[in-house]
Image (cartoon, rainbow, N blue to C red; front, top):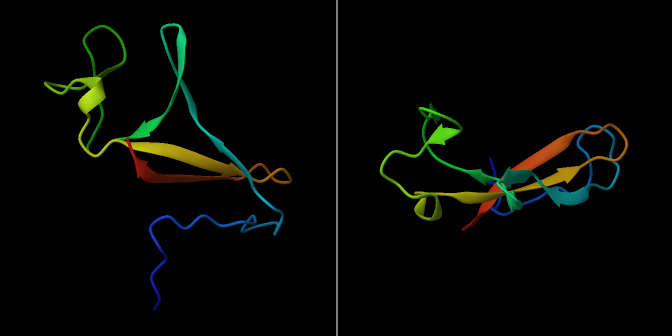
Length: 86
């Protein structure tokens, strides 16, 4: 069995065989639009709003990876990838 390279991104939809459109998942914070991140572990609700990060500041999340996406313009399928370290 061959391994897929860690930064492999398919060029066509696995269902439709149509070229995929590159993009990202937008995340809003106050008045800013950010790129969503993948973080290891289970999410924990915060006391007031959002998610708790415990003792870790948002800018120093362990193993935080930018989420990139590719979308099929035909069926709408999304392929998400978390390869780029922040």
